[in-house]
Amino acid sequence: VGYPILDLNNYKKSISWYMRSLEQVIIDTLNLYGLEAIRKDGLTGVWIGDEKIAALGVRISRWVTMHGFALNVNTNLDYYDGIIPCGLLEYGVTSMEKLFNYKINMDDMKKNLISCFRNIFLMN
Image 1 (tube, rainbow, N blue to C red):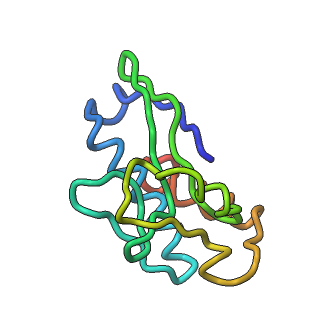
Image 2: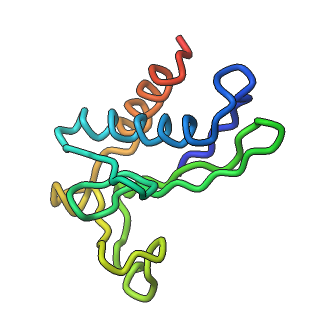
């Protein structure tokens, strides 16, 4: 889970720009692991094929961001059995652990995600 707090006055005052930028951070991070992550037209989040691997939910007040994203890394997907994730019946969910069949090192994941975040939001 990532909850970036950014002042979009210093970037671009656009909710859609911010959401697509967060998605790109996750896409770039997953690409580092050899996963072909994509967006789906008209839907928010990041996908591997027809399965959602990351969900986004933000709040913006006075152009300051709150909340953020959830990327399924080593997520127990059994928790999704009793719900309809994001209200989307026709799509499933996945995790990196499910795709690779082993647990992902979270320290490495955090470093990779932060690096991609810094690149997208030009924080060098």
